[in-house]
Image 1 (cartoon, rainbow, N blue to C red):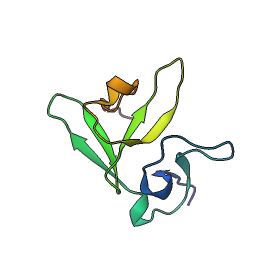
Image 2: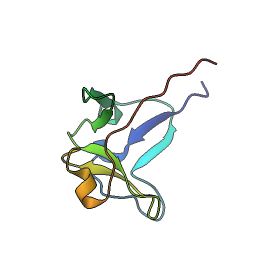
Image 3: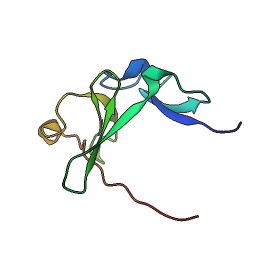
Image 4: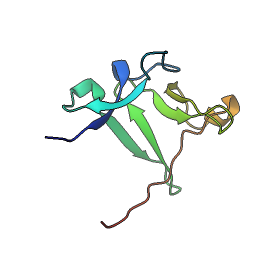
Length: 93
């Protein structure tokens, strides 16, 4: 169907990817239950992305642009150099 989905490998909980794969991928054409995310409203115009296993997605700084699916507390992510709160942008095509 030419549609791909963003999924977290193993349902999240991986600090980083490996040489041959990443912990967040876009090559899935069907979604299994463990590959789904929950978008959580933080009440301040930001949102977190929570994996099925309860971890959060975080993005490292520009100097080390890594993606983690092993952030336990999105409010404390900045203390380890990650951002785990995001703003959603809507657009019309």
